Image (cartoon, rainbow, N blue to C red; front, side):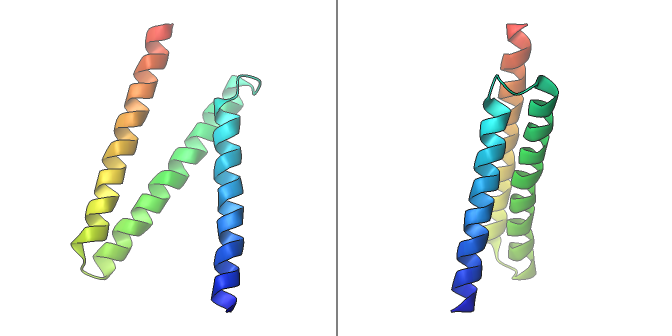
Length: 91
């Protein structure tokens, strides 16, 4: 019972944090320096989640979570690189 309540509270908090950071990072009204910092925080959070998934798989000797974490690392990395290249080409 208490686990469900804690899970719900954490889900609401993290959803608000991720959504707020994402909206702030993509808004043109926010200063560029703050947007860059928000993107860095967002990437750290995403890579942190991937790291925890990988660690869980490593701890349980299960290949599936490790494979999912590696795929997420690669996908997020590719998306970040493509976004950086598109921003630089617009200059």
